[in-house]
Image (cartoon, rainbow, N blue to C red):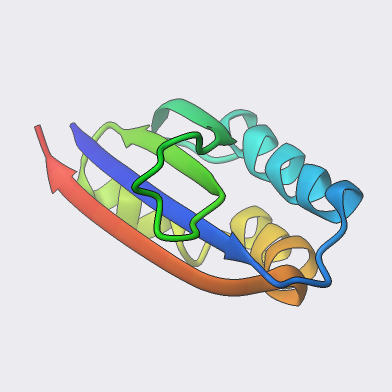
Length: 97
């Protein structure tokens, strides 16, 4: 199994509605992209967040599923239309368990 973790830091201009839309779009990907075992996203409450406001955790069946996820049209639509317009910084980590 592969675990994919992404942290998001939004621009100062990002509205709560735009952020909610981005998170909702991400949440819908589990039903649209094969190989996703579990997907969750939420608001970061850690005092050590270094400004990252939200996190995403996706569990994939294997590395092939992760590799298919990034270019998948549904993932790209969320990234291009909902995330990139309000994104200031991003950090991603992938590991196998």
